Image (tube, rainbow, N blue to C red):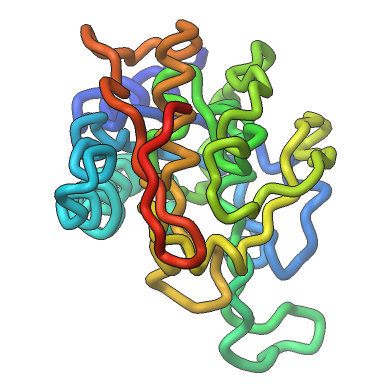
Length: 285
């Protein structure tokens, strides 16, 4: 590891970044210009992906069905727009103090359409959106699990990401090799709305992953902890607090597939679920 990378990762740890991965720009060779980092910063050499965990207790009110606002703040809006954003800009300014240019990127959904017209004929229209979930895979932090969410060896699905584009010559993080998802199918089994379809293969930077074909229009109607995309209606709904993801949290801990497991198990009682007609049932999953 070169000295710059070592010092950068040490600073990131001091700033309480829970996850940091570095993808060389070559891992984005399969990405179209309208989602490519170099369309924003042509001199990009490294894409840094920064992650902050969703504390397990933030999901507790959702799991019990008694308090949804805690997740909305500490698991969603405040986490990404305040805590994680502050860490991201701190890391970017540290690198710029070392005279390497940095472009911080928030986690806007890649499905959000352009908001303008091209200003140069051979460039994509603004705004270029980089797929932060795929970037996390390219940066070696995790994989896309069967549920369609990024799973990391540390936290499973319990994290959010932002990015930094930089011309700094940083040492890349190896791609994740050991799988986190065991394809148990419990995420699909727990969904009372039938949003999970057949499996398909998703390939990111040469890494192949079996992922369920999810009907996100159904997820947008989910009342089991999912939330609409707060940035644009075209974006995927937020499912990190939904029943399917909470079931994944419990299963990965029970099977010893994540390192940040608590002393007590996550699911202590049968789970509640609300179907498309609004009927609530209590079910063992």
